[in-house]
Length: 115
Length: 110
Image 1 (cartoon, rainbow over the protein chains, first blue to last red):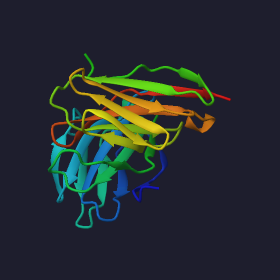
Image 2: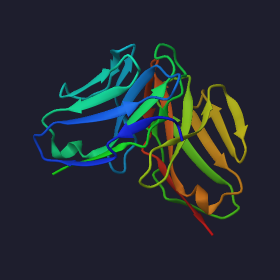
Image 3: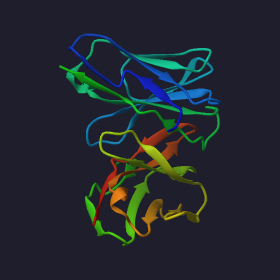
């Protein structure tokens, strides 16, 4: 158990819809990052939040957006869902987003299926 | 060239043997390296981190790092069927972005 909790664990959406995924970080952690893991692939970095601001982003379109709240919890929002968005979405928390070597700990993930 | 490369496997080893998992990376300035284990249908869990050249041991696991060759490996001694999983190698790019390989699937045969 990493202390990182995500919800919902599974959901099915229709193409074109919007989805919000939620994450509570581990106690004492102030940084949250989100990853997308397609079947048979490694996790791909979406973005990271530190002190309620996005401070890094991977190669994902603007329809992927997020928020971090004062209690360090976070949301991932995906608009205009496409079939290729079907994946496991992983939230990871760590302490401090500004120095290298920070170890990230994953939550259990949210399985999203787009039909 | 992929940033982090792993053989997808499956790598099959008999119970009690040593499993050797390998990973190469392309960013020469990378300083932080990690191994995660992922069971089917579950999220990745951290096994080990390594930052300096050489070996780092933790129980049955040993991580090896060679920055000159841009090579990281994970050895699992006395492999058990419960070690059967996909092992992900990860490298930090820049200050915070983790780059993962596609993982090596390990099968430990009882």
